[in-house]
Amino acid sequence: MAGAVLAPPFVPIRRLGIGTWPMRGAACQAAVESALALGYRHVDTAEMYGNEAEIGAALAAAGVPRDEIMLATKVWWDKLRGDAIRRACEASLKRLRQPHADLYLIHWPSPDLDLPEALRALARIQADGLARHVGVANFPAGMMHRAVESGIVRLACVQVEHHVFLSQQRLRDFVTPLGIALTSYTPVAKGVVAQAPVVGRIAAKHGATPAQVALAWLLAMPGVAAIPKSASPVRQQENLAALDIRLDAEDLAALSALPKDRRMVNPGHAPDWDA
Image (cartoon, rainbow, N blue to C red; front, top):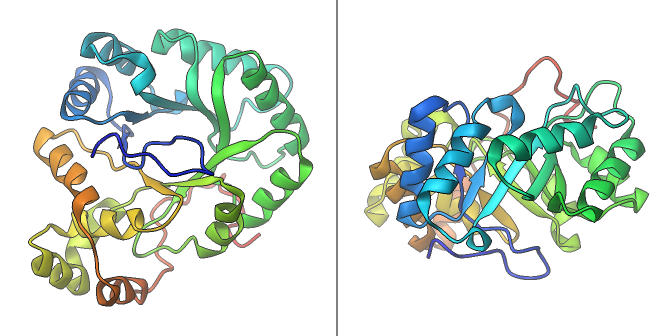
């Protein structure tokens, strides 16, 4: 169950991972060790999270063969020019105690992003073995079009906020046929799904929690992975169990009918989401 991966033509991204923002310190290390012990094999972090060292310690302590784990990290948007991406990647790997990442992403596009330059830097990182796969996060559909059409590097995934209150249909319509995975962060909408009567009714029908229903809705989509954050072993296990929930057509239609314009993450440096 925990080892489930997206089917080809997607790269082998684990469908359900553990997100680690904003966990730090010993609590972060303990949470990742717990997740790995339960069977998680997809761990998501970023240099901005300030927890790469703790995640590196958790990976070392867990005793799980490294080739079973998909480790993703990201470069912050102020390091996208010149050799800065390469230096950031090397620094992340040092903190993680790893010779390579499985997935290395641009965390956010900067306001003055030189897209071809940044993509060439990702291509060099991949070619030199510092990352098995590369991708981007928080790119709207128009920017993804430009990145793919450049032909500079094969992008394995795009990571974006995505949940029952925020659609990424336009982006999915573009990337899914190309075999580019969409990784959903904030997949339970910071717990707001528990307040939605529709989600509650479907949860009761399946003997599940609202969070499990929200995750199951995402995981029913081809090419979609999800990375819920949880420090609690009980909640981590509940999230894993979402992989076994099969929503029927009526459930999926009711969840799809919810308003899809509620964004939880929208910092000042965010791009134009409609671009």
